[in-house]
Amino acid sequence: MTTSRALRALAALTLTAAALFVASGLAPEVARADFLGDVSTQFTDALGSGNYLLAFFFIYLVGLGTALTPCVYPMIAITVSVFGAREAKSKAEAALLSTVFVLGIATPFVPLGIFVGLTGGVFGAWLANPIVLVAFALLFTALAASMFGAFELDLPPALKERFTSVEGGVGFKGAFALGFVCAFIAAPCTGPAIVGLLTYIGQTHDVVLGGAGMFVYALGLGSLFWVVGTFAVGLPKSGRWMEAVKSLFGIVMLVMALFYLRNLFPQLMDVLTRDWVLLGTAIALMVVAVAIGAIHLDFKEGTNAERARKGVGVLLATAGGFLAVMWLLLPPPGARIEWREDFSEALAEARSTGTPFIVDFGASWCGACGELDRETFTDPRVVREGGRFIAVHVDLSQRTPEEDALLASYEQRGLPLVVMHGSEGSEEQRVTQFIEPDEMLERMREVD
View (tube, rainbow, N blue to C red):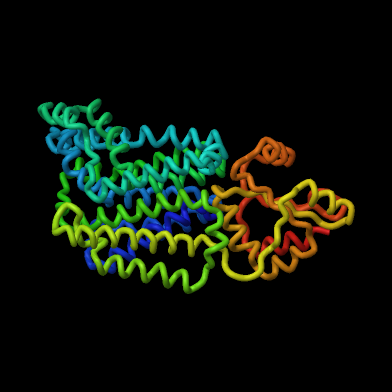
């Protein structure tokens, strides 16, 4: 089984959002997208076991969940009326128009998935670049501002006017173009899911998964548009509940911004500890945030005092959500393998003493690497067995030419990679995906 760190972070964020939403007492049935986090682990488990049909089903659910979010849901009825499905002469024509619209949504996603599959670890390496991390943080902060009402993401007025002025809709070309534009308008809510999925695709170097997975995601995102356009189904109207949902997702976006900045401050992993104090602090901050108005108050309405309460609540909720994410990402307390950092020195010692040697290649952007570090290499039995090895960790987060050459010497492109050498220096075991402690222990014991 393999669980991507980015997808685990998405799970933490969406579950945090769900907790805030339930606490506020404002969660309507139609807008609940908290199941995105619930399916993320099952999704990556399915990929790890080779069950692509099940994995694609989960990807579809993530896309469908995105359609229920504040960035997409309010657009459905308006957009369907613009491309003219409801004015179609027959159900078949309405279905065809709706299908073309969904294909327009898929158009920007599919090449992105193929590109990441082809470039492999390049996407992950980008996520380790401080400039890219800051850019992502600024992007999610801007998207959060849109959720709080600073500005609206919508079709350009001139384009909307041109579309609506066409009698009977915009036709097939217009429906395709409108779907293409809507894929970008949905960015505030597709961002976390897309980044998590692309990060996993980059680790697998799987072009088919990249293209097909992103296409299936687009089908999920466009399903409600298709149903409404084809069968003229009415949806519950947006109201005050949607403003609460937007506030909720604004907080999630701010937590995502902090999540991307965390790699710039690696000291956090040393200062914070995965204990009940950290989790209790996170929950307390979120409860207080909801109580003082992080969700139910509105920046655009009310008194200055209420706006100030809303602002403080948003800050507290963001801090609490980030601490909750860190609690999930931190390794459990207890003993762990002590990794050396100098590969050449460790290798020389292993050869001179005839000691088994284990080298772990990892990176901050590699989800499976983080899983191995948190769940496998912290197992007491694995730690004890690791005591007879000289263990070295090669951090590829910044990827120097020397580190790239070292990875290439093992004829390996992607991560994770754990190689175990016997006392005579020959390679005896190789791990290229997340494995449970029991399997790691068995492999380590086979190394002489």
